[in-house]
Image (cartoon, rainbow, N blue to C red):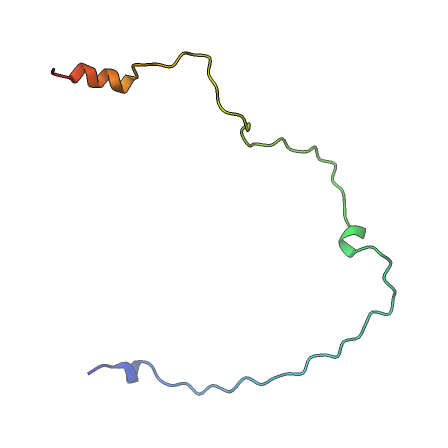
Length: 81
């Protein structure tokens, strides 16, 4: 036996009614060709920040390639053959 009916009671909710929207009224002034964000833009003369991304090119080294890496050295030191 569960207590579902006692714990979760049915609530009386009024149905949602549709409301009428206001009628569209166009603006009386003609459009002057500038958007609001363009006409009210405030320019702050800050220098352009440098990019923080790494260079596109590959990371090259002038050092010769190590044949014996530290991991290989440790492996060879523990080798018992």
